[in-house]
Amino acid sequence: MSSALINLLGEKLVSGSDEKATSNVLASCSAVALYFSAHWCPPCRSFTPKLAEWYSQNLKNKGLEIVFVSSDRDEAAFKEYYGEMPWAALPYSDRERKEALSKKFKVQGIPTVVILDADGSVITKDGRAAISGDPTGADFPWKPKSLKEILAGAKIVNKEGQQVSTNALDGKVLGLYFSAHWCPPCRSFTPKLSEWYVKSLQGKGLEVIFVSSDRDQKSFTEYYAEQPWLALDFSSRKEKEQLSSLFGVDGIPSLVIIDKDGSTITKDGRSAVSSDQEGTKFPWYPAPVADLADGPGNLNETPVVVALCEASDKGAKESAEDAMTELAKKYIDAAKAAGEEEPAVSFMIAKDDGHIAGQLRKLMSLPALPPLDVGDGLNVAGKQMKLGTGSGSGTYYCGRHLGVDTIPGSDGSCGPNNGPQCPDCQQACAAATRSTQPPKLMVIDIPSDGAFFEGPEGCLTAATVEKFVADFQAGSLERKQLQR
Image (cartoon, rainbow, N blue to C red; front, side, top):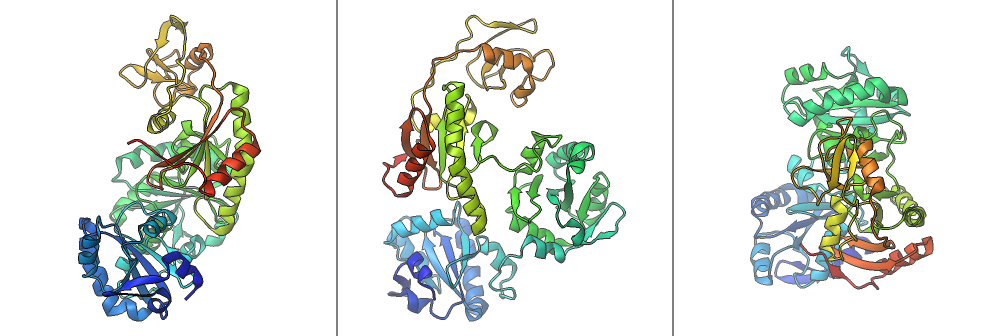
């Protein structure tokens, strides 16, 4: 057993009624499953007896050891629940290590099973599904297949029903389109994606493979008839499940964009394509510094350095984004080299008023921004547009997310979600003024139980950002709690 596992789990584990050296408890295993669970959780109480049966009958003999990581509310509950388990446990008193493990493996719900190899490297974070699908351990230790391995065992077909060699996919940007005819949002999105694909995206170099969640062959055949690209044949059900697991697909429609080298560009290809239907930014590499106006990004997955610049002048916004970009690229490159899904730290910027930026300010109890001022209103496209107060009835968000009470603009495109396309809204924004404020850096660490850390304010440089991130990672910043 490696020192990495001992460092991860500590020197001692609970084994039965005693504490024993971790090195002895795990001496003969070839894989370790961290079982995040609690007695108060009904799904946990349902899953634990099954896992105990599978472990005792087959999995222990295969070389699996399980370590219970408790989310129970007190030690008495821990002891009662652990009494039902035939494996080891992290001592309940080591709450700090429990929190560190939950954060390291991004555990957001229980029961969760994370499977590690003997060196402490992650085999799969979806061990619950892996074990449930193979309780005898035939595929132990359940190392997920790579995309290339999955596709090699799959049947890919074209519109004529002919099987396509996976060699034909080499060197292409792939879009894996997880969808089904029974899903109303899918039926709404598929015609749009088909139009964009035929008109522009196919010519840009995008190859799409339909991965069906339809319930039978007939539904698959009827739905695929509406689509202009390749498909994973309905007979390849096992490969379909493997792809869903590999990319963490838990809802449809979902479009995952894969680069030519097999690395994942984005799991939110649906948003990327919808906002760039002609593929001008193909293949939609995420910006090193994401704009909060485009969505929450990695806020729920990683610590995020956020530059709050809503009331800053244009030059300050550009300087703040430039100051973060090089460091952001380093973290992205490091994650890719290590095979990690997300960088250790992500970077975002709030350039304009918006729902997410506004919510973050409230959660951090920051002072309100200086009010926007458009005087008595503007006459735009023959309509009087007045400053609104947010997302109430009759209020629309424009290109800079300024609330204005208005009927849709002259081109009919002014609305909550497509305001950036409305030149009338942009004119109203351009005329709006407010007192300026300098950019302010914050770290928002939602995975660490909703922590945040206050950073410098003023002119931001690369050195300023790098020092702030270094201080955060060194644990030298004051931890504050997001308000619910």
